Image 1: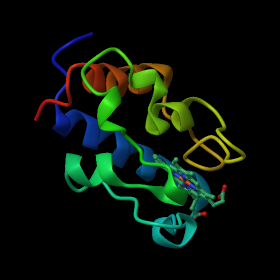
Image 2: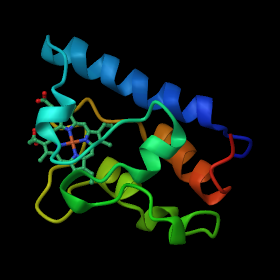
Image 3: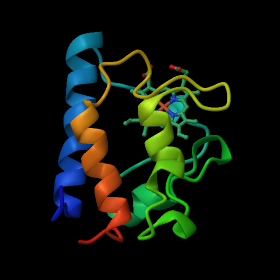
Length: 111
Ligand code: HEM
C-alpha cells in the first residue's frame, strides 16, 4: 500500500468518530476524555496531540519504518500503559485502516 496522503488519514479518523457516534448515540467528549489536547484538523495537530503526556506521533518514528512504535498506531491496535484500545469501546478502525495510517507515517506523513 503506498500513496496514502493526509486527506485520507483525516477521512479515516473522522469516519471512525462518525461510527463511534452512531454506535454510542452521542458525540464523543474528546476534550473531556483526553487530558491534554487531541485533534486532527491538520496533520500537525494530530502529530503533536499528547493525551496523558503520550505524544501521538514521535518525530523520531516518522519516515523510517517505525510507525508501529508510535502511540497513535499502538493505541489503535490495542491497550497501552493502562489505557484501553481507542476509540474507547469501539467500533475500532479496521486492520486495513490502521495499516493505511501506518504506511502514511512510514512514508514521512506526506500532505
Ligand atoms: C495515546 C493516545 C490516547 C490515550 C492515552 C487515550 C485515553 C483515553 C481515555 C483515558 C479516555 C476516557 C476513558 C475511556 O473512555 O476509556 C478516552 C476516551 C475516548 N477516546 Fe481516547 N485516548 C487516546 C487516543 C485516542 C484516539 C486516537 C482516538 C480516536 C481515534 C480516541 C477516541 C476516544 C473516544 C471516542 C473516547 C470516548 C469519549 C467519550 O466517552 O465521550 N482516543 N481516551
